[in-house]
Image (cartoon, rainbow, N blue to C red; front, side):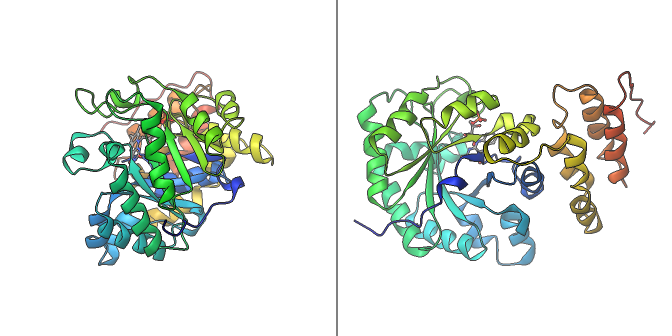
Length: 344
Ligand SMILES: Cc1cc2nc3c(=O)[nH]c(=O)nc-3n(C[C@H](O)[C@H](O)[C@H](O)COP(=O)(O)O)c2cc1C
């Protein structure tokens, strides 16, 4: 039995935003933090090798591990399956101030399978246990956690899933984020693998019932505040991915509902982002890299389409700045606004 991972206080687990490659970059996390002060945020998956070899200089560190102080609590998600490399990468992540290091055991992409990590690790509990034990030893003060599926392909035996969790819990891991469906390793794209294999939340609930000593966060297909709230009766937290990204105001509603505080309007929250955006623009970051994360802010609202259109058409233009965001906000106040993009 190895030493146990550092743990995470229960109130910091209720709400989290899923790791999403190409989406949950540092700008996105900064924006989500404004909306949901209590949410736990996750980076995109970074391979352990990239963390070790790509962070020797400032530019690499910024690209792979960049974050600002406002983002805490924020978890670094690692990909990999070599205990030695993962331990090194976990130590680097801990030294960079990440509040948690999470190991990806759920990604089904071909590239990831070829590298023998991600979802195919569901079939290698002993290896995952070795990885987790090495990460805990290397970063004893930082919680080491696992995000997994229920199984791969046609694994449908509860005992197999339970044995996977038990082996990794024995290695010291206290927290499992369960994307509550199988990954099908042949014949489905990663996108289809988030939609086609059926969701089975009851397995996440059963895991929490049978192992109340573990912290279990349920993930997958959570679409709205009612559904998210219902999961809290059975698990320690709900992790939202696509719904949070496409309708970020949902994060604000959940944060207020679960933790209290005053509801703020979308425009108010967005204007609170202005200093960050202007700071980044001054550093040479293009507006388009930030604006893409806010396109869904007025999802389902009057003027939401115009808001999205103004930003997606204007943010890539040279010199685009905060005034474009104000223009988009103005459109949400106008019922019959028609956007005519300027001639290129
Ligand atoms: C664009 C995109 C990228 C993703 N990248 C990752 C990733 O890097 N690591 C990971 O564990 N899961 C990744 N996922 C899966 C999500 O974390 C989550 O498990 C999945 O989307 C199901 O949750 P949802 O239905 O709330 O979106 C990604 C999902 C999307 C949509």
